[in-house]
Length: 306
Image 1 (cartoon, one colour):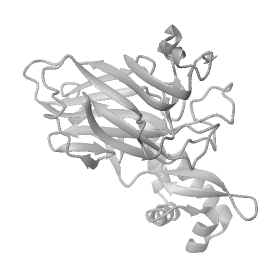
Image 2 (tube, one colour):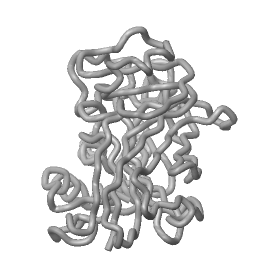
Image 3 (cartoon, helix red, strand yellow):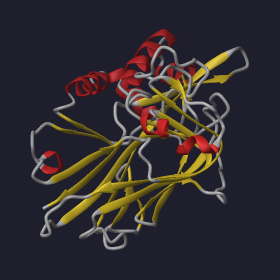
Image 4 (cartoon, one colour):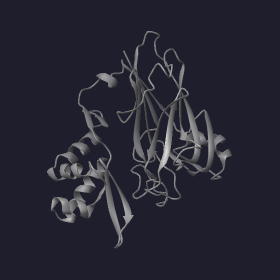
């Protein structure tokens, strides 16, 4: 689910504009069932390819669809897929999880991990460029890793400790994490699946198969010096744990609930993300921080309570 608030006015306007068109709604309906290239969409809707291409650009700019370039019989073709099944627009201010009286929120820089286990290929980029030496596990213990804006590894994990400061009588309703990530391929490859697992307080929440490592266009926040053949952006994924179970993008993925992760009266919460050695798809991990990729955030944690 794509969740938007009235505080995100720029993105809210983009998304609202993108869906305020019969043609673009028809395109989203087609992509509900399968990936399609632009020519296939044009044929289904009986419209010129140029018309479809311009509308695809609007949908892509709003983040509602993802496009990848694939080889075709004659040159290349742009294949489209939908990013979200639902869009939720919260137009009220300071209610629900946006109310500071009911939400404890903390953003963790991606370089501030407390533990790690790294298998190359691996590397770190900060605002000054590539931290040297590349593909060296010892790099992940270097002081410069604190300023990381992009981290990648083939196998292993990164572990973070989020401090929690809540009153003793707070009744926790849900725990949420949000981060931008993708697979890790040589240069980039949109068809490069990777099984990325998330743990909270030592409990495995779920394993998500990321479809690929994205680099067909430049990430919206990337500095100009980042080379074009490098990983450019990821997908923003949202995990939630409440009293009924665990969810990925609001789809239930496991029965692990708040009681299982023993969240009450804890001074910190441990989040671990990685690729296991026995995964079916060991396709690595790219984790994006502020200033890289498409989303201007590090790892965001929210605790909703009453």
